[in-house]
Length: 285
Image (tube, rainbow, N blue to C red):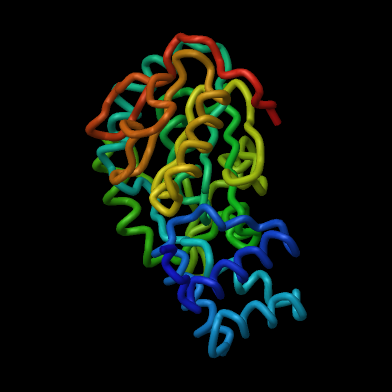
């Protein structure tokens, strides 16, 4: 006998369907537990007693959509988060990337820009910045605006600086920002080689010919099918021998696309695109 769905499950399904059909935001394949927590946060912030009330409100008052998306997406990051990952990039990945005359780097799920600026700084310090284009993508439009502005509270810079030094940096993070009016403004020249764009791993296609994709602490919010879709996109986006970096609690091991990659620095969650044929049927964007 089929188990009867709870009212909460039905409300969540209808709310997600409404977001998708009305506004084209597709959260339906995100982790169920995370969705409930994020949706409850949206109800609390928007003073709704239930998800049904939130659904009604967002359908009839589209001006609240940015507030809803803020709640439904996780914007927690910091510059050089997990320094061992960036140290491995500096020591082990960069020497391979030096062999390419030009480079493309995709930061998928860039949040408010901390990771893409971290990579841009690292590439500048290692002499690869001027031949690299960085693509930073995110579904949250407000986060993208903040990322492109590149302004962070000055009190966060002490932690960012400590992380930076742990990556093996030989100079100061302060070389890459200006402090003014209680904030730290990222050097405008760093922003000159970064393209910020909306992109959904749930619905959109790939950027092509990437040499490095960094998608960290994003896939933990996806169910297995959406994780596999994302890995398929990354497989098709990367050049042969390109690199894929994941978050500390993410892995390729159980993916349907694990065979397209080989472990490179698995402790730091870095894989390399194998030299096999590309998967057919995925369009480049």
